Image 1 (cartoon, rainbow, N blue to C red):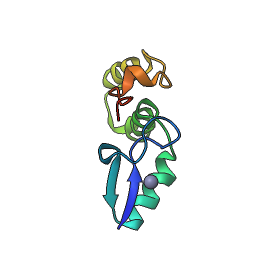
Image 2: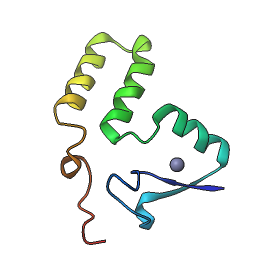
Image 3: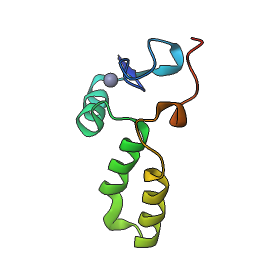
Image 4: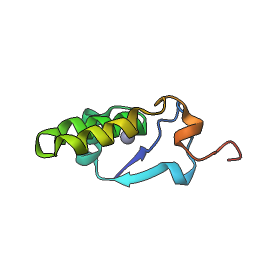
Length: 85
Ligand SMILES: [Zn+2]
C-alpha cells in the first residue's frame, strides 16, 4: 500500500488525514499517469475528455460549462477551507 495526497501537498493541503488516501501501488501509479497533480476541475475535465465519445453532446457541453465556469486554480472556490488544520 502507498499513500496518495488527494490535493497535492504544494497546492493546498498537507498530511492531514482528510487529504490522504491509502491505495495499492499499481492503481496509484495509474492515477498519477492519468492525472498527474492536477486540481479537481482539471481532473474532471480530463475524465470528461476521455469519456466524451460515449456521452451525448449536450451532456458534454453542460458538464464542460460547469467545470469551466470558475478558475480551476481558485482553490478557495473548489476546496474546503483547511487553513485551520
Ligand atoms: Zn499520489
